[in-house]
Amino acid sequence: MKKRIVAIATCVGLACACGSTYVSYGSRYLPDASINGMDVSNMTFIDAKDALEKQYLKEHQKLTLMTRDGKKLSVPLTAINLSVNADTSYAEAINLAVRSDMRGVDEEAKFNISFDEEKLASIVETVLKDSGAFLVAPENAHIEKTDEGFSVVPETEGTELKDTKEICRRVIEAVGTGLNSIQLDDSFYKKAVVTERSGGIVDRIKKLDLMEGTKLSLDIRGSVELIDWGRIRDWVDLSGNIDEAAVRAFVDELAERTDTYNSERAFQLRGKEFTVKGPYGFTIDREGTTAQLVQNIKDGVVEVVEPVYSQTAATENQELGNVFVEVDVAEQHVFLYENGEIIADAPCVTGNTSLGRGTPSGIFPVTFKTRNATLRGPGYASFVNFWMPFNGGIGLHDAPWRGSFGGSIYRNSGSHGCVNLPYSFAKTVYEHIEKGFAVVVHT
Image 1: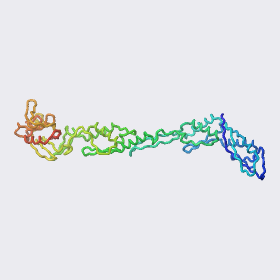
Image 2 (image 1 turned 60 degrees about the horizontal axis):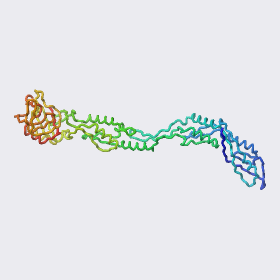
Image 3 (image 1 turned 120 degrees about the vertical axis):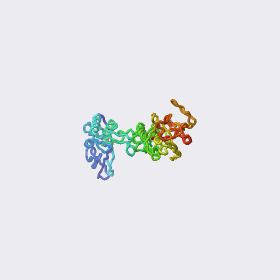
Image 4 (image 1 turned 60 degrees about the vertical axis):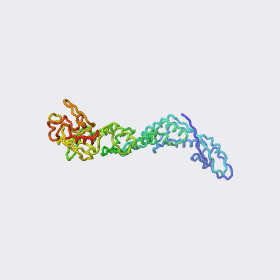
């Protein structure tokens, strides 16, 4: 049991109709006198004191806790052994003779208040627990990802209390000072640790907004793959980390679909359609392209970019280039193209099919070119003026030992696999092609 003393302002109203004379009521209050809003006219000091104490106890049977969200919780004070003792020292002033022209006398009535603080604290704890009003924890601000992009979801207040012991302390203080209610302001509640203004959130959303704005037009030899939010939303997490494995999977699929190196593809030359493949064309550098795209996304790049290639070729004329050579094995004829037009052609002799040495079909880059070479193999050494290999030991060259070309010579008297050409035509081809130029062989 602890005692508290509280001063409550009182007003004692005095009135008298006895002219200018002095009147003394001794130990009674004057007519129309009041203390703390209670009429004590003609009451003895003892009766008034008793009535004042009873009124105090009647008005303090409960204390109201007002929550942040507008709820009101009642804390009963009837079981805390609350008692009050009014200090009657003010009676001396009241008992003085009073002039008839006085309107009243202001006085303070002091109260000695006592109650069981431990019981009160226990009651408060029970009220808080049983109310169910403080169960919602605050939620931190966070970033969410939607179909439209990244956005910050602000923190929420919640209703969970920070420390019930502090509330108990404040209630005890309120009861001890005569208060009937306490407003639970923000200081009583738990706060979100992360707010929408927290540095981590602000910095991260800036980073994510930059990535979200990425708009890459990936130009693959005239065909464009758009890489924007619709595609990268699944590659970027809420922390701004990029799933490089997912980007690599995209690049792998892209390479499978667009690489032409060693890939079957259709061509049309001179109105003739055929399909070949070979070590000529484009190959996307998958690792390099993945790294480039990851960096582009981090930087929020908005522009046209190209993949990183490990193997390239010409882009004109079905990727055959401005200058290329066509070898038609079925027709035993070779054609030299420039800017998409045939500028020279001649009959040829290809590999001997009866001996299984037929010239393989495919598309190949010229490995190199040289003059005055001796071609050697099992049982032969042949001098040529123009040597232009394109498929290992198979190449284009003149054949001084031949008197005729074309027709069906290749079937039984063909080469070891090379394409034999007349001298003048071999010279023309040599003068037009360079290393890396395309040679397409088909039947």
